[in-house]
Image 1 (spheres, rainbow, N blue to C red):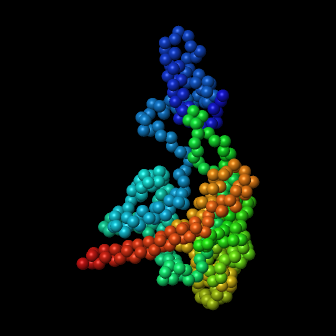
Image 2: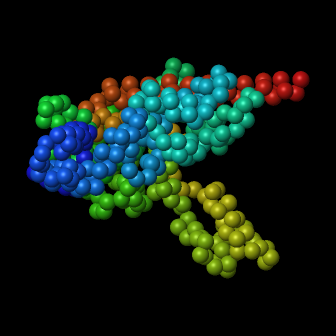
Image 3: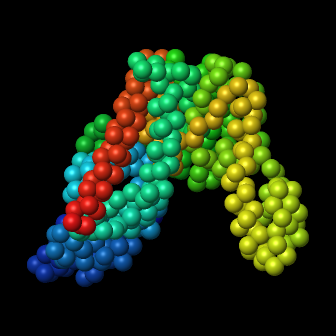
Length: 423
């Protein structure tokens, strides 16, 4: 049997080591042996390269702590999505107590509490993307959230809290919508196996074709008639690459709006196709200087003749921020309001956990075929009941209150520190 091209496991390395020791002893003690080159003899016997045998033997000569197998390739670009709320909670808790937070301390917390080893470069990149900065905090360096992240969250929470009655009931119905995807080969990583056989599962390579799914929930469960599933036409790293304004807006108008309560608040994230400007002819960097002038004049601004092209384009972007978005106009025409979650806050979307429930069910029943995946999808949706949604929304409301309270406490603590420094 040849092992050429296959992964060299720890067990195979141990076999190589034992054979090498045996052949070396044989060569030294016996009068005749089949070959004086024990390394080549092992390679031919196992069907692997002689260089591989030499590399394994070189590893055995190193100190034990250096034998840890390192993953090849670049470190992951970002941490898993489910750890982003964990990172935010850990840093905010430390900030609230006035304690220093370092990257290494955060890495240790993730390693000990979640058994996840995150490379330093990956963690730093994720912290910046989530809006954290490393700056002066209570006489020492500390990780803290940037103000634009805090302000976006406060603006969102203010509107959510305003929709609650004195007893916690909703003044207007709230609808949470989101998109996700699932691959044909989506299955669980862990399984029971017979130790002598090894953990080999006949799983196809790669992730396989993918289904893209749109749906929405209220406190009463999935919005009936709003489920939309289609097969991705191409494979990209991000399922958002398979979505566009045409597909999303068609679903929004034809399947979502007719099936939700009147006067609803529709809550969604900031995906690019959710934020298409109502004015389709918004200028691009390649737009000519005269075309920029025409766009500005159309939007009630007369540019000076001495304005550079770059100045005109910046003014266009400034005015565009005041324009309405297409989705908002469609929703308002049907008596609804759009509310967008603050960036980097998936924990404020209860439907995210619904997707996790659906995917877990699909992973349990995976047989690596698209037919089975499509057949099991309705059964997976049934795992998310009205009671599930009510509990998830209640948990999210508690988290909203926690954010609202802690933001104020952190702000008061900063003000106290400033006053103390001035005294």
